[in-house]
Image (cartoon, rainbow, N blue to C red):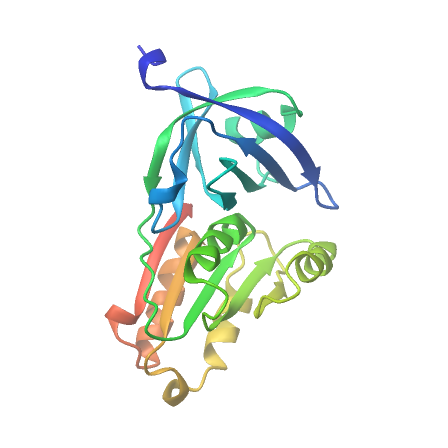
Length: 223
């Protein structure tokens, strides 16, 4: 029943961050028209028998039909086990690409807030926004070495890596929000993604600080 809906992709390369709880997967998607992407996309990848997980293509190239998935694999689950097994040359299968809930507003500054699971997603939004976009924000990371790798891989990205104290901790991101001057961000759009309870708390905190609901876009990945 699944076969008519599945499309193949080839794993071109695999790279691990240190420690190996974040993995980058380069893919070739011969049946995917990336020229029509106007927002971040989610690939619904087959990770097991009747099991699928959504991953965001980032750093894609329309002409070569290639992209990169940046996937957090610290937690246990069929998706993480599948990603850990992938090697260059493997064929994977996905059920098309669908747009995320985040829609770019290019008429003002953008703030990205999330955790390890959101790095690829925000890289996709950044690519769509273009080099001249005004982007800032913070990503909370559990591994201290990942902060260094984050800064090395994305040296021109004005998104700050923060050290998490606990796996599901949101306090660092909340503290970052509390440090904002509301008067300086009247035309800013906030993009929240990742851990759903953390998103709920951050959205509530932004509203308490005077930002309107239209300034906040949320995309939950896991709870």
